[in-house]
Length: 191
Ligand SMILES: Cc1cc2nc3c(=O)[nH]c(=O)nc-3n(C[C@H](O)[C@H](O)[C@H](O)COP(=O)(O)O)c2cc1C
Image 1 (cartoon, rainbow, N blue to C red):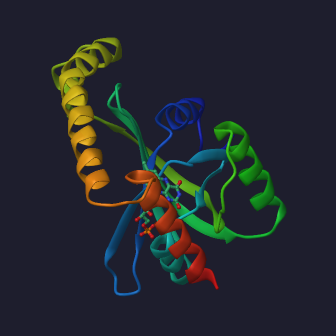
Image 2: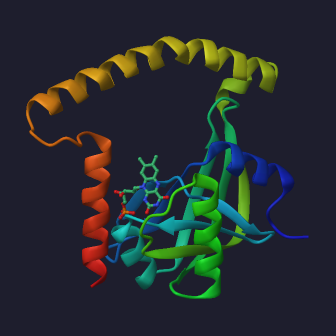
């Protein structure tokens, strides 16, 4: 049996987001989110490098990586420790990108695939369970607690969109434009 359990798979599928920590050549931490985190097999997880030049550069010098995945409502998840290999233009790259394109119903440029051989995994659980009896209760509490905050956030996002629309003549504004700029930068770095 591999390192990755059925519960780890369930958490990764539900969370659809991880934070990946690498180390810079100067020994500094580098942490960034990856929404393409998926399970490859019983011992490997992966994410797509779409706009992650820092993570990629660090891994090319030092393969050690830690990935944290937390399912938001249950407030529990896992820390995965291992070593990464970077894949381009090979069968692993092609299979993984096709899988994610299929799931997302979209195709976009991908710089590389980061495949992590998980050497060790640790469960991580919110201290909120000290005063919350069950996972069901935790989910309910967080749904209720975060509902007003999400409503305020949607309002704040709308205000932000309005102010960026009035300060630019571009038809495409907001996160979509920023993401395109980042992806273009990522592609430029490769060449
Ligand atoms: C929710 C979310 C999900 C993201 N998912 C990915 C991803 O799967 N792959 C990727 O390359 N970038 C992803 N990004 C963008 C990178 O995290 C971002 O470009 C970051 O600055 C890259 O930093 P790095 O070069 O140090 O890795 C995501 C960003 C957010 C906010």
